[in-house]
Image (cartoon, rainbow, N blue to C red; front, side, top):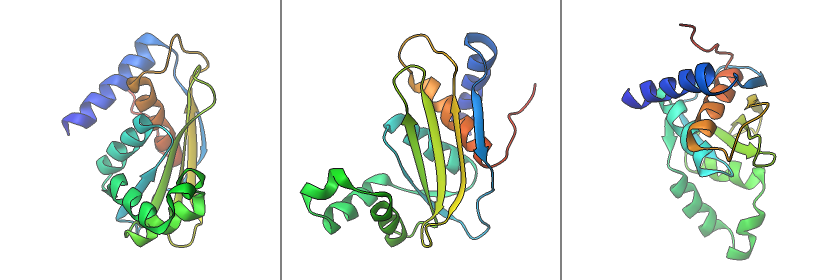
Length: 166
């Protein structure tokens, strides 16, 4: 609970004080009612960590990414690991018992950062929801707090949630 309050504090601080509100877009849909577990995969540890915390805060059990990496390493030769595609990651997510696979990636160049999220049914591969968030401009390199806010905003957009007003 404290983590959630701290995250909302960062959102309020960044949105109201430090810079403009992020630009968000997405095609929303709530998590399917059968979804109890999720696996998160991404290209930036900060966006993956933010997505894990957000999903846990919204009632999903998140499978440890290290467990997925061990299964991937067991299933694929070491030479193929850097060339993993979405289907291979989805297969492993299904194998470890995830209902939903969430991709949480930082895209674009370093400035301004953009975070995109996509929820995929781990068994069928059907895209359930997606969203992204970015700032029009950011001074300096993206911080963990900036990427956390963007990840939270992208997930809220993807689930059709509106930010809380004061």
